[in-house]
Amino acid sequence: MTRVSRFQPRPEGALHLTLDGAPLRAHPGDSLAAALLAHSGAASRTTGRNTPRTAFCMMGVCFDCLVEVDGQPNVQACMTEVRDGMAVRRQMGLRKLGAADV
Image (tube, rainbow, N blue to C red; front, side, top):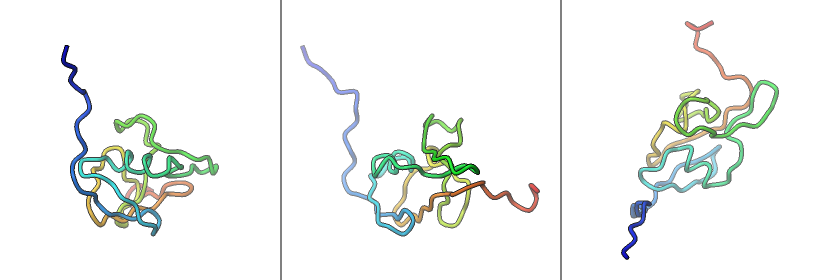
């Protein structure tokens, strides 16, 4: 009997990005949340009560994976594909709202 893997092979090469200024490697096609979890599994943000959060649902529903990407706050890491040179920062505390939202 022949078995076929359900997992796709990893794309060749690596992308280089930063997390809070520290270097991080990811693979093409990875979501940012998957790259962050593979890197350390540490919290990607904290709540207003300083409770650590990280990716939970991996499908854009829970918003626990919010990070800042290239200066843009409130980006859902699970819905964002990694790209070379991406600068990612953890969000600490309450997320900031735009002036139109206040």
